[in-house]
Length: 514
Image (cartoon, rainbow, N blue to C red; front, top):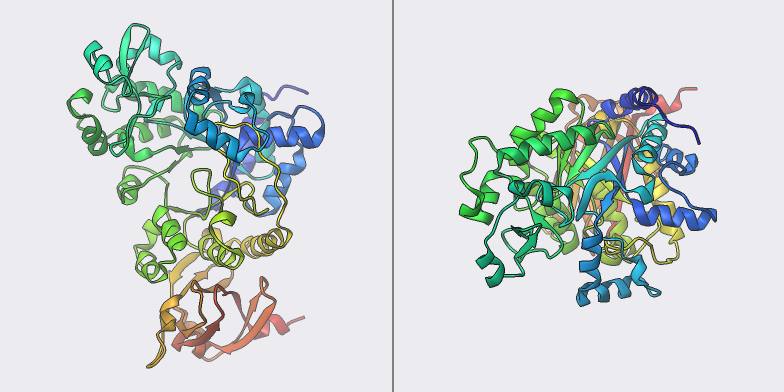
């Protein structure tokens, strides 16, 4: 295996940047790196790390239409964090439930209990990551990694060399509340937490208000930006001045005049202008985080409403400002949520997948989602359980992704469509519809209920009037011929429970031409 030089990485990154830059609303594939590499090793009958991933694995993701890969959990794991996890009976029970043949050595520690922002040697180290990034870039794929602003592991170098970067406590605090404080190197430091739950036992709380921390974080993120194209920031809202002050009060000191992210993000982009920031965000703080510099923020509300079946809450949710929606991350599964196949039955999952993957914004897919994995692996574990692939589900996703490879879903204009019923028919309220306009025109209508629904759908395309169009749905092998007047004045739609139309709209003459 040859050494990948910095120049080669930069050249490959420039090659891949064309696809990244052209994907204003990208499709991102999340990989739980450690168990994924373990699985590849088992399949290959040899050790596989980031430097030796078979190229066809990256090629398959590019061929499927993805724009970026999020390698979750590449940073050095914490031995202290793993030991704490092994001592937690409830966690061990969850490990045993996920892995029938669980062994203590399967516990590698949480990827969000960062021992150091260096690529874990087990995964191939910094050189291995550089090989993976270069391979991804050759296939036009960008690389996303993690950053955890709120806390680090108790054995992270900063805890002993720079205790001033942390929320401090006293000996009395430690005696009174040992679950919330820990002594490291002669200093009493607070354990990490958010404002709504007790402290997490395996991490130590950084002081987001400390100017010295912001300087250290900027340096760390600039080094990370040398190795990838963007970061997904874990629980990004915890570092915001308002949230942090509410959580820690006087212990944090006076909050700086400038908020955390407006100080950090521009400083990183001074040296890496194309670097992207993605926020894991909750508590209705998505818009504020967008204003503070984030390119994308999680849309947890869409996910929660799909799970709860609150279809009539989705119309107002999707009526928000278009620019805001283009900076949201849509998903029905990620490593923090249960597996989609365990939450939805077969029909609901397909409808939910169509509804999320055709929305504006970034679209996130989790490794194993296409195959119908049902066991959510605790992030502490380095090995997947054996599960049988759902062939029918995999074929559905392959067909769906083939349609979504059209660049319109990345660079086009998304718009919510109006659905209406008539006296005696209120089932139209269970229909959602939206359009995409770009290199192609697309109309998507989804019935997100367990009963048949019908209604009239109006698109924004007034210029279509007076012409005839062919509407083709390759995911269901259906073709309709309709007038442009129908499309603009009210297209009649009738859908069975959990069904959809993913319609490419083309002038009839285009299809008749040789």
